[in-house]
Length: 74
Image (cartoon, rainbow, N blue to C red):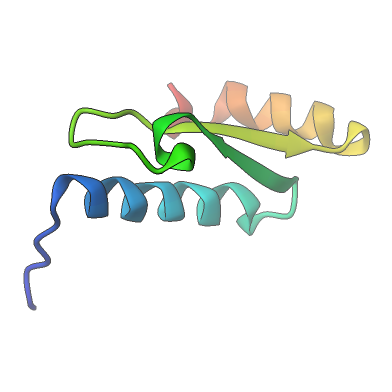
């Protein structure tokens, strides 16, 4: 299997894309807003990822329950 090497910025882009894909995969999250230095286009290798999930009122309780019981969410 080929090892993928990323620069700092490419690694952030890849991580953001994977997080967004996971967030919308179950259909509870309708959209994800990207903010901060990545959204502005001035991120560097020390930047964090500022993502804000958008959840409908109907899905709010289900999302809260998932966040309580999903070990990936700490």
